[in-house]
Length: 211
Image: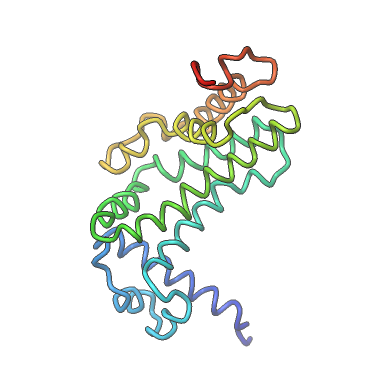
């Protein structure tokens, strides 16, 4: 049975991204395009046709994660269910054993390749926060939540979900709640929803002392 060209291209791109992810963990910014192509089992020309630079590869890897994290925003589910799903994905991707290797890889490469680190942040965590902020703004418009500053609230939500999860992951330490991700995710979503419920007093909205 003949293979469909689109499927072949998708498999090659997936192989490239997996190879790059592994090499970034192992070598940081020192990973070369030639090494990535070799490990992916593709020619250098194929690699450059899809991803001209390591920055393009890093951006694509980060975008994959952002898409996975924010997919529940399109579900049309109740706010608590949407936030629970996002929280569980974040905990699973960041806090489970072995998931911190990619974070360490980015941390290692950032001093040597700040443009690559910035691209990874902007296309990954930064984009996730922007999408959550846009969703929160829409919930505010619909009257489901009261969120005067959606961008700040989105960052607050991510912080509530992960706690020291990022730091533990980078250091290779286990997360105490990693094996109970569904319960932690649900509890975090409930507390966040309670804090930004439309009928809450003013102190749950803008930061105290803000004009």
